Image (cartoon, rainbow, N blue to C red; front, side, top):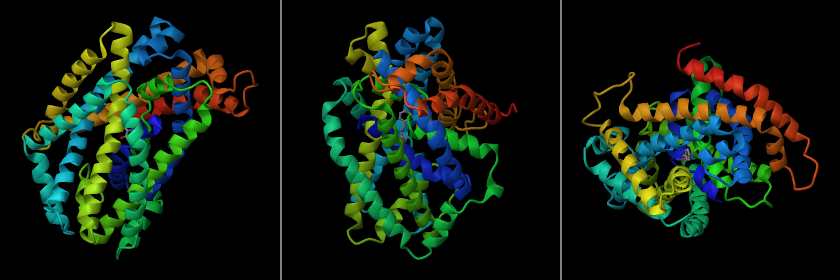
Length: 431
Ligand code: PHE
């Protein structure tokens, strides 16, 4: 349940639809599904196995099994956590703000220009978005500061299925809008003329981000997993659920985009700009709108907690921090990094590094480089250095290893590392 809460979040509902839109639709979806099934599944299983075998944080786990030489791989994960959280809380803040906008009825419209202008002017203001990000960060700190969050687990068990049901309902509504068929065609029909190396790296980045992979998050959650749970089926359930939520969100957003004439390649604002349109067409739309953004904020919260937890676990285990101090330090650093991210939509939008705004740079650095690099190194680690231990961990105690574990190992040894290296090098423009 906790791993599903980590995986399902803004990555599915905010990031996935706009990345599909920017990458031409159907062909991207196909590549994405293949990457999730192959890379997502096998790497998620290795991370969970690493955590459960060592019962440690990422840095401690790699050091325990591989010696000090592998410690930096854990540090990479800790660093990725900071980078991701710094922009994640900005978007989560937008979600909180939209709860308010919906409830006050200020965005009851189906007009792309009007909805776009409202979003733009909100994110460009200097203080308001940051105040919402601060509120969200405080919520995260509060939950993580109080231990692994029994309370949140209990209520997310109720609210996550509610989000899923609401999403199904909204998707059905969206695809029955006039003109929505064009959106379905865009989303579901592959157009291979739009595929380039870029498409693969975007799909891989999205898959890792959405599955919380490559930064030790699943490793940390694996360390809390019972020995009696089967890793393969647990992982399959989480990966499958995550994919379903993304596909639903993609269908819903694309149907709205084409029905009302939004721009599918509008970028990070896409979900926020399009969604109010569907609520405006529904009886009781305000209620559904408020409910939706509340549930989305909860999904973002359970994900954000999982981004912070590995770092906090690391500071507690390896540096003897108290939980409170560890949370305070992380919160301060993340929020400080969120400031330039948020301002990059307004006052600092002209400031570019490597051709990107600060927000885009953080997102790109983490998802296109840090997560794939983390995944590449962990596949080498598990495939070559810890393969026996990993197969043991994936097998039932005392039983022979299942035959699929051989295929899994071959994938980790010979397929994942060169493929990930190729994608990293092409996105860096080296190959
Ligand atoms: N998977 C989360 C989401 O989709 C984000 C996340 C990334 C969580 C990396 C943990 C680690 O929103």
